[in-house]
Length: 215
Image (cartoon, rainbow, N blue to C red; front, top):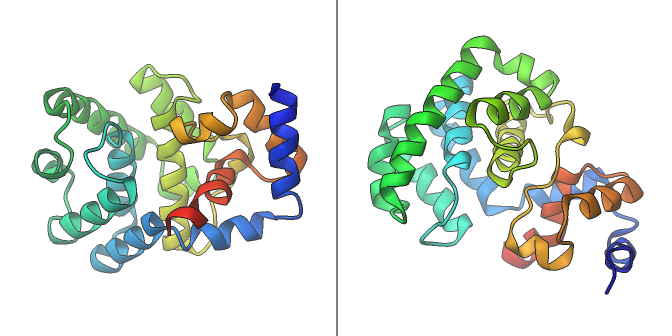
């Protein structure tokens, strides 16, 4: 099936849905609910968003389903709400390639700490592209790299939990293109085309495709 045919098929299935529909679906996501429970415990917007972004940047090659992993994250950091608890958390719940992840954590920590020193949560909320650009530059990864845009998605979840609204600039963020999504449309360009036709930012399309099957 050609790229245009694949886009057309998904467009037919998703047409008629809106951003509001996507948000309703996202709020049934177990990952969203896990973050809600975490914020209820720590009640510190900056720390909450900081550790959420760090965890998203370390969420690869997991030893369990992503939803289970984020629930473990919520439970663990509800008890130990501090950035420097990540090595212990990784050793317990994200052990694949542990040494590489511990090294990545040190780099990610510096990048995220630097971002939050330069920019307030409110500034990032006014333009989510800031987060993507800063992390991309600091980590030397593409702006559409899966972990970078996944960090933007999880910041979006966290920001909505804290402030009751989404950050601005979502339409400029690409979809976090993982292996499941690649089976449907293998390129960021195709997802962007679908997004344009639906009038829904790419970052919301992940939930419309997958959350109903996993929640």
